[in-house]
Image (cartoon, rainbow, N blue to C red; front, side, top):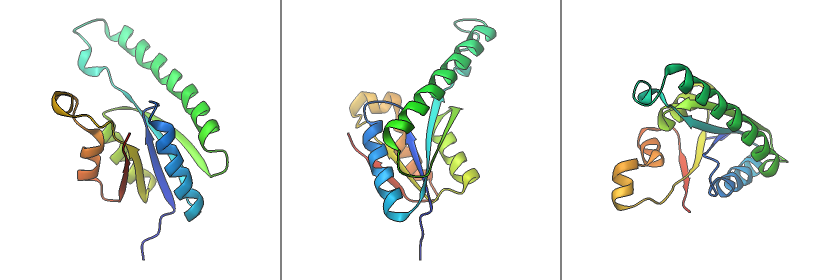
Length: 145
């Protein structure tokens, strides 16, 4: 029988993130599972050499990570007061980082939001949730806006 002891709650800190967190919290409480809240800050590596120096992009990334850490602390305090929770931040491509942490942390289930993009936006930006669902070795619960 399948068991769920650890849940990855992937968030981007948009207005959708508290809704995703509420499902993660509900399932964690029901299953007595732990939650890892995970945020992936976008990488700026592809832009280096086109719009600025390496050091200015490294400073930007460092500042972005510091802001994400502060936001993570607030987000956890507001949404996960009564479950075992850990916050983690990474940088890079969201789907790759989500699948990496699932493997590294032996996560049993992913909960993440979708943005409901359609048409040209979906073609241009793609869907992180769709790529995770297609590649994930574990169940993925997606929450629509």
